[in-house]
Amino acid sequence: RYTGPQPLPDKIKKEFAYPSFQGEYVEILKSTNDAYWIKEVEFISQYNLIEPEHTIKITYYHPRRRSKPLPVVMVLPILGGKNQAAKFFARYFARQGFAAIIVHRQEKYKKIQEIDKINEVLRQMVFDHRQVIDWIEQRDELDSDHIAVFGISMGGIKATILSAIDQRIKVSVLALVGGDIPYLLTFSTEKGIIKRRNIFLKDKQMTLAEFYQYLRQKVNCDPINYAQFIDARKVLMVLAIFDQVVPFKKGEELRKKMGKPDTVYIAAGHYSSIIYIFYIRSVALNFIKEKFGFLTNNHSRHQEDEDLWEIR
Image: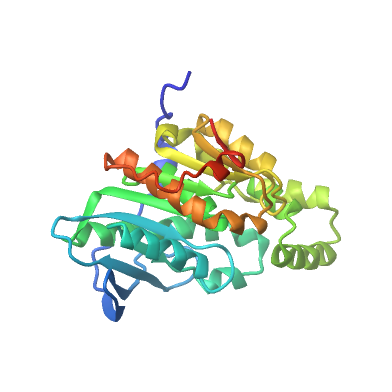
């Protein structure tokens, strides 16, 4: 029986200690409609492991016609593309009365070729997102006691680590996610990962098995290492049983390590899971509302869905 998360060790707290963001930021209104304003916000990171200085960029969907402080959903994008999936979910959350905040990827991180820097890149991502939470706390119109995080694929991996490290995250929806970063980088079928992996293997004259062991020595900022520090009662996972990009078995391992949170299983692979995108956004919203104590809207739970998913 699940009794709750393990306390975060002091050693890990020190590893992720940083000066809270209290600086200046630039905010620009980009567009508006009947439901929300869309704003672009930028500020300089106050803590940098990777480079002397970089800019943190967010897109802020600010619902209209609401007087009380807004609950927040941080939407963390996938590894590639133009953030279309993140925008799809952010628009939906905003129309449901949540402030939706897309934390943009740092494209420079993707261009880092040195395997030795992977761990630092993952840690820097955590520091960047924690500074976004600092910014949220500065905004009078935002309810910093009700912050949820939503992430798919790489966004889910980042959201998992962030949920373990930062207690200000109250609800987490983690989709197409897994632990054991060395394994994911070694065996993922994602084209970009395969390309970079093959270049490295050729350059270093390594086998896949040697590559995996090499990464195990280099990477410790990994969801599987922090899963036990997350309150599973506040987590919803979405796993695709035919996923080979983030292998399904690694999602299951993460789930068990976390304490078996509520989980939706979909009959799809990593990319074909897009056919469930409307369903995923609905169950994500319902879960967040439920955990925040809001009324749950069950309008999307049609009978045809019952044959294709399972929560346990």
